[in-house]
Image (cartoon, rainbow, N blue to C red; front, side):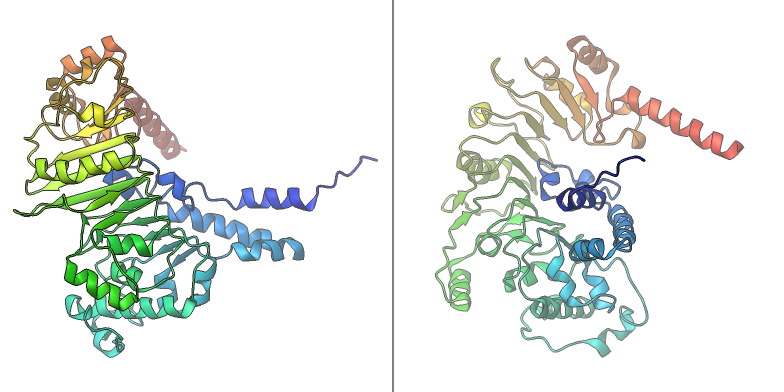
Length: 431
């Protein structure tokens, strides 16, 4: 008679945790160094794939039915991902936020007659405790702002919440975050790309553990605003100091106004490793001098990835960029001129936001330690000849430099994958 091997409870729990794990989707570290808007918006990537989570959630519910001990152990893993829309629809209670690791504030385009139809906005409008924000929002936005704010109040503090995904919604999620003290553990905010959704000293005080910020602007308060915030929160507020001790990835789109001056403010980002700043409507040199350089220095010159660009792309990178970034490994820029790095510099990847022909003119293929050129497109959307010239491919091949798209595929790998998928689809059709 064969012997039956009994596993310990701890080992079974380890197996169960592995069975219900969702790769990257619930892991803030999966966003380390993600600098591309296209990659952030890719809903099929593990870090953004909600369908993968719901599939694992069905598996979790099935495993709960095996025995009472599994049911008791797997129960607390419910609601690791919560959609605020489901609370708004009454499908789950607000208390489910207590277990959430990731929360989505998206409305998912819902127009249901019972809850979300525009014609019912005025009938459902709730009284707001603060009307200052409502005049800036549409009627529908104001409803969501009120309901979500009250829901967060009712749920209380969140000990496990680490990822907040706004999916570029227009209602005042930034206002909600600043208003409530339930986001102390949040490490990443996604989708802050709307009006007034900016990185500010006050936002950083509310989110002390923030590691990754994908936002619109760097907003530094005027003295009058700082005084108002100090009175509201009954504590002094240093409006000239922007401190983020845990920030690793920072993406900003800057609007420069004539006469604007950031030089009197203190920017402290000691953990910063990945920085992307894009300028709109000019002011490239002022923003680089007053914002980018202080950020690079505050990291103790430890930035590994740097992307700096503008709409015009006419200005050049400063000659001292390599001294400011002695450990830089990945560089992306929309500027047309940049001096080559010294022989000892470790940079090995260049991110090309435009066609590679601009990269060729800048002499990137001749840099001493360059190993890879990444195009900020997917091969499937463009023709190879349009993106890369024959001369560029020839030089890259002779130097052993790999040219790939955002998906990490070379042109040859893309063609092979495409042909294999076509063969698979044809075989399915013949069957």
